[in-house]
Every structure is written in C-alpha cells, then in structure tokens.
Length: 201
Image (tube, rainbow, N blue to C red; front, side, top):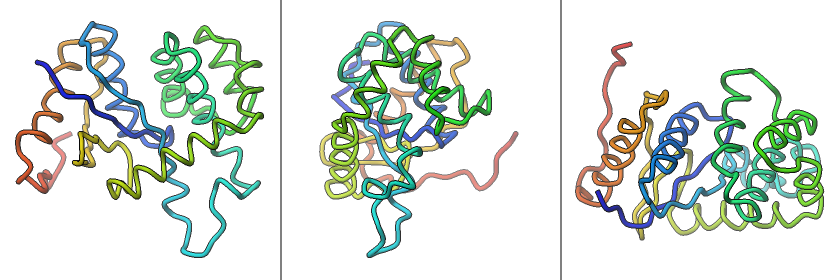
C-alpha cells in the first residue's frame, strides 16, 4: 500500500511509543518505502504548569532530554544507523530497565548501534539537538495540538494512537499495523474516537 508522507512522535519513556516505533522500524527495514519522519516529543514539557520553567531551560531536567537529543543527532547526522539506535533506546528503557538519563548508558547504546557515542554526546553538548528538539516539539503542539506519543501526523491531521502489539520479527504484521493506522487517519476523518472498553489480555 502506498502511504502519504507522515510523521510519528516519540518519547522513550512511553511503552506505546515503543510498540509503534518497533513496527515502523521493522516495516522500513523490510522495504516498505514509507516516507516517515520520526518526530521527538517531550512528555515532561507537556506537563509543565503554565508559567513554570520549560524543560528546555531547566538544568534539573536536562538529563531527561539526553536520550532523545542523542537520537536527533543520529537521525540527522547518521540516518543509516537511526533505526537500530532508536529501537535499542526503547529496549534499554522498557526491556532492560536501564536509565536513559545516564550518559554512560546512552553512550553504550550508541556504540553498539554503530555510531561513536562519545562524538554523538559531544554534539548533544554543543546544544543544537536541544534547539531542534524544542522546535519540533513546539511545532507539533502549536500546529497539530499534539499532547502525547505516539501521535501520527498526515498533512493537517493528527491522531493519538495506542497499539498493544509489538512486531516481534514479523515484518508483515509491522506493515499491516502502520498501514491500517494511516489508512484510518486519511480515509476516515469522521472517526474521532475508537477505543476498546477492555483489554482481552
């Protein structure tokens, strides 16, 4: 199925973002050819009270931005390694219980993912990844009223999605999952909310 260009937000703390981004990466690795933008989003920032210090300007919150800032460097400077690093950062947080606020943990994941972790973190320290992070987060909030992850954005439309499955090596499942979500978003704009009242497992 041919899909229009789309973006999907992520924050490494969210297990539902982990699920959908594993589907995205698996589908891309299987040759889906999707034109997808991986859009960083800060769940911490959306919970800052009005008038409070933003996470971008609060030194006490800097470590919570580290993993996503590192992912931005990889996405923009080393895109051929982004998929592996992206999935590994989610796995470290949700499968391995590692603390992505620790530089040593992030550096190790980057190294294993095929990029020089020390150099990536040096770029994080330069400050430009935070500027990109802030700009893309604010654009999602201001332009599409995004409030969480994962949110799919196609053109002027955006939808918050929770998918319960992980691809677990099934690239066909990954393709179907992403294509069904985008098809619902594009083909059924009148469907505003569709939520199961209980979870079967």
